[in-house]
Amino acid sequence: MEFVHCPFKLCNVCCINTEMPLLEEDIERITKHGFKREYFVKEKDGFLVLKNQKGKCVFLKKRKCIIYQDRPLGCRLYPLIYDIDFKNATIDYECPQKEFFYKYTKNKELIKLLEKTVNQLLVEKEKRNKITQ
Ligand code: SF4
Picture 1: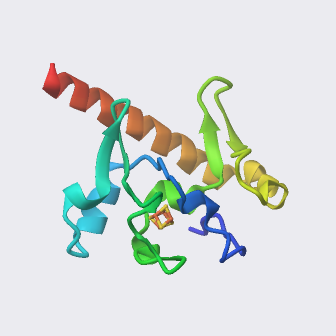
Picture 2: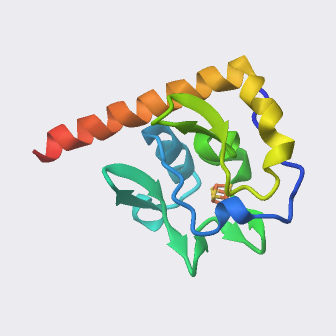
């Protein structure tokens, strides 16, 4: 499947102070590179999200993502995000190139994947809640 293609390689805004949520399958894929879970995963509001180091994602080195081929699903879809209040896919208003990406809000395959990802994140959050109760 083709994910969102970002041609603005030097932008990196989405990797600065990231709060990208992580699926368990993202974590499993990334740990296969030898990264310990504690190195890149933290909890925020019940979700597991990427950690930052000095204000940027721990995987952003010299303006490049060092796990690009195996980056989290959320990073592959960004700036396509899901608006929980309006229950629809939209483009993150914080993306400086948002106009370029609006076409992706019409891509049914990606929207389906985004919705599936959001549902999975909620299921995993619920499961963790049950375990800690
Ligand atoms: S995993 Fe890669 S693409 Fe995702 S926020 Fe970190 S550096 Fe950016």
